[in-house]
Image (cartoon, rainbow, N blue to C red):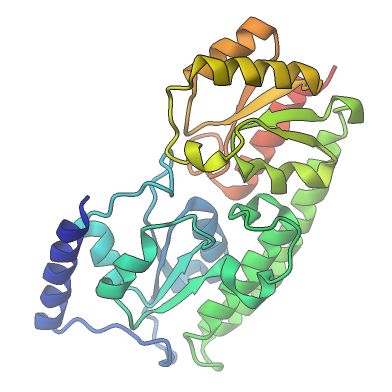
Length: 307
């Protein structure tokens, strides 16, 4: 959607809500003991899961990026603008994952409490540089939970029953993530260390695989050229990739479920290296939730890499 069109749609909805008397809470206002739900807008499925687990019946969560689609290339629709305009809290991942976010927020609802989770102080020092996909590491997923907890709690009064629910659930969710980490470690142990060598197109897999001592070969010199998920890969590039895969002793090539790359499928078949599609977002049948998605990825790795 062109920038001019986005601004016209945003202006229409903002005026509609102003004229109809629709009110939203600013970042400085707090809810009391009202049973009214906190309206939260999130960008991607993992943020939806963390928010829902924390808030339970005290939150009404709207997700902008539908399962199966890329957060890099979302085209804002009127329903997205409406959700942003009505929100009390807006949660984005940050670090460039949602390049459309800031422009939409400038017009849609600057009064909402807006949090770019991975740009908060808790993420100031972490081992993955500018990588935006930090939810793929369970220790850092726990930091997501802590940041989201603080954002939700800031919107309700200390004596509100919602605050109690959110605080108790914070402990429960962190414990559940600890248990999930132990489960994934047991699953991935089936893969011998010498076979934990993979090639990837995107840096999304680094936070997931590095804690388990995987060697990761980044195929493109700059992964940004594949953020648009280009399907046409020059023959000389494919030839170079084939040489690098064989030279580095890679046992599998990893792609994302959301973005098939037929040319790479053909290449892997030709050189006899398995290609496996993993899912960094979830939200679809079989991997609806964050734990489902992480278990799905671990099992598929074992299927391809375990002897």
